[in-house]
Amino acid sequence: MPACPKCLKLYQATHTCLVGHCVHCNRDYKVIREHQCVVRKISAVLPIDLYREIMTKDDGPTATCDGCGALHFLTKFVHGFRRYNGVDLCVDCYDIPQITKDTSTKWAQLAMMDMHMGKTVCAICTVGLIDPKAGYELAAFRREYVDVFDTQCTVFAFVKAGGRWDSIRAASERSRKLCMRCHSAVSTAKRYIGIQRLKMLQVSDGIKQMAARKVESLVYLLVFQGSNNS
Image 1 (cartoon, rainbow, N blue to C red):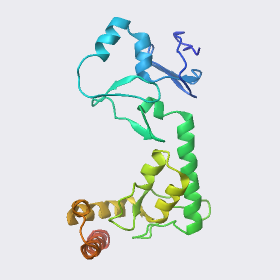
Image 2 (image 1 turned 90 degrees about the vertical axis):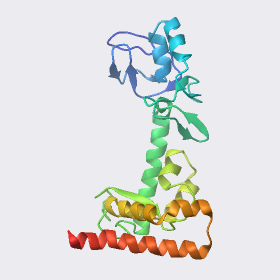
Image 3 (image 1 turned 120 degrees about the horizontal axis):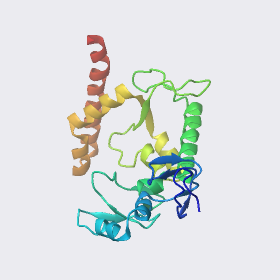
Image 4 (image 1 turned 45 degrees about the horizontal axis):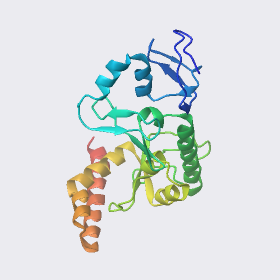
């Protein structure tokens, strides 16, 4: 069992992890190799009667993590669960090296694919986003579906949820890369035109095309006319 070198508290192993956090003395130690859900750690520190009283108190909705099996209260202090490969994980169980390595590898693959496809500048204002030779990031950006009525998950959601590479690649091919300013303009235009409501109403293709043209026109005014006025 790994132990905190500061207070020598022992922790039971439930996941393999490269980092550890001792809640007893509130210090981080990389020598704690096995990962544990923070709820399990708290249960090991608190007296068992007090822990049971806290965990059985009716403070709102609860959910059980599929990774550690611990019960979590879904309050403002718990930032929800993460869904990965079809299972619901608490934040502590989601943030382990196996998952972070998988997501970072997929982001690197997407970056290489963008380089080959020439997606190195913003699709609207053409500001540089990726160095075309070195491949490093020049400016923050977001991937936005070209079709404003596309109902699939975003590329970001696919990657974070552990989606298959073919699904991620297909979503990326339907997307365009936008700088943060242009992404904000597109989001504003979609809200103004009411794209989300039109998706729910399942309108005809003619109305979709007209709404998409209105979005593009409004984006042009926000990006280019706004920059000229400034």
